[in-house]
Length: 296
Image (cartoon, rainbow, N blue to C red; front, side):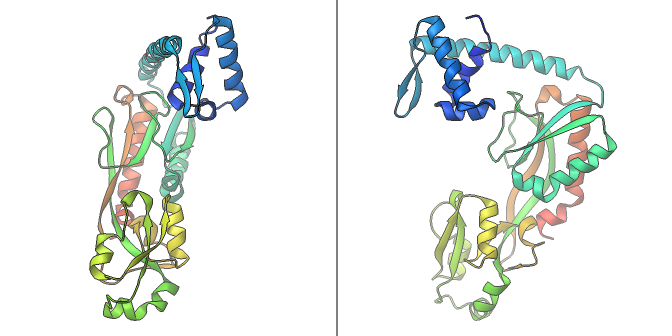
C-alpha cells in the first residue's frame, strides 16, 4: 500500500456500508470513492469488500484493512488532539456543530457576536441533525439538545427548556368551542412527531378523548409548519411556539419540561483558548435568554 490515505476510504466504506454514504462522509463524489477502492483492490490483488444487496461487507482481508485503518485513525486523532491542546492563542479555526434549528433561532447570532469580539478566530458552522463525533474531531464544539451530554465530554449547561401544545390562530377560531368548553367528544386533529411513539400524546388524549392523528412529522421544522398550517395541534419547544405570531397555546395546558441545551467539547481541548472562550460565551448567551427556552 503506497498511499496511507487509502485506509481512510476503506474505513469510511466499512462504517457507512455503501459507496454513497461513504462519499458523503468523506466530502467527495461517489465516483471518487468507487475509483479509489477499485484501484486499491487491484494493486493489492485482493477483494476487500463483498458487494451485497444490503451493502458493502468486508472480506477477511477487508477486516484486516479496516482494523489497521482504525488504529491509524486513532493515532492521528490522538496526535491532533495533543497538538491542538497546546494552542493558547485566541486565533485559528473553530468548528461548531448543531442542529439547523439552533443556528436559526440563536446560535448564528451568538457566532456573529463572538466573531466581532474575536475576529482572528475563523468560525465554521456545521449544521447537522445527526450527532458529529467530538472524539473523532469531526467538530471542535457541539451545541446539543439532550439530557445526557455524555460522561466522556466536557461542557456547560446553557439553559433548561420547556415545551407546550400549540395551534394556529385560524385553528383556534375553528375549534374555539372545543377549546373553551373542553368537549372531549369532538374529534380534534393532532400533529405528532415520529420519534415520540405511536398514537395521540397522553396529555391530549386525557383532555380530548376523541383526538386523532392527522399528520406525523420526522423533523421539528416540518412539525412547526404543519401546526402553523392548521393541520392539527402539536407539541413544540417554547422557543419555537411562543415567539410565533401565528400560534397560540392550547388553553389550560401548562408547559412541561423538555431537554436541556448543552455546549460541549472534547475534554482534552477544554483549555484551548478559543474553545474555552466560546464555551463560556455561548453558554452565557443562551442563559441570558433562558426565558425564551423556558416559556416564562
